[in-house]
Image (cartoon, rainbow, N blue to C red; front, top):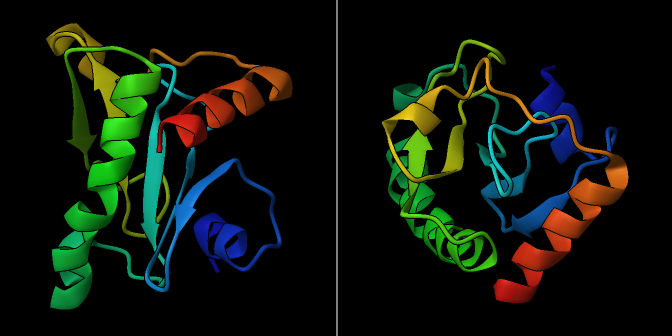
Length: 129
């Protein structure tokens, strides 16, 4: 069972932003930028393109209002979707606020946020949803 499956099952707490029957969205606790969010399907599949078609189709639709809310809460040029997928063997996408290509390095440019700051980020996005 991956860490994401454990988060989905409620075994590990998260800073939840949205949820439906197929997806869960929560803050990355080691974000590259304020608002950096993970969108995770509720089925444990390692590779994104191995997901069933209804999950692939639904991923962008589920992510769209989140991306809009993140952009309102943390003004930026755009919210990009980054799919790396090696760090956790559970398909997922990163919604990352970006102002340029230099912001794409989400693996080494990590912010260290306190639980209080993460809660504040969560509240700002939820207020914008």
